[in-house]
Length: 106
Image (cartoon, rainbow, N blue to C red; front, side):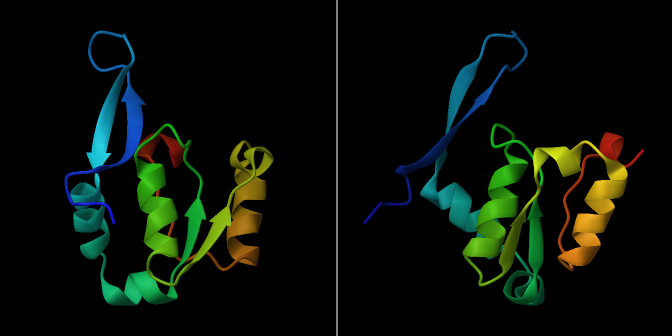
C-alpha cells in the first residue's frame, strides 16, 4: 500500500527555463485534491477528459470521475479541434463536469 509521501505520478513542465523537468505528485497531493470535491459533483458527474495527459488538469478530470463513481468521457482529438463537434459530444454524453481554459472558450 503506498504511503502519503510516495509518488503517485510524475508530470513534466518547462518551468521558467524552457527545460523540461519532472515534478513528483504524491498520493497525499492527489487525495487532498480529490477529497475537496463536493459529493454531489463527484458521485453523479459525467466528466469530460479533454486536456492533454501532460497537463495537470487531466488528473482532476480522470481521477475526479473514476475515484468517486462518476463517468468519464474521453474527448477524441477530432472533437477537441471542432467547437461544433465538441458541443455535440458534450450534449450527447450529457457531460456535467467540463474543465476549460479561458482561451478555449474565448
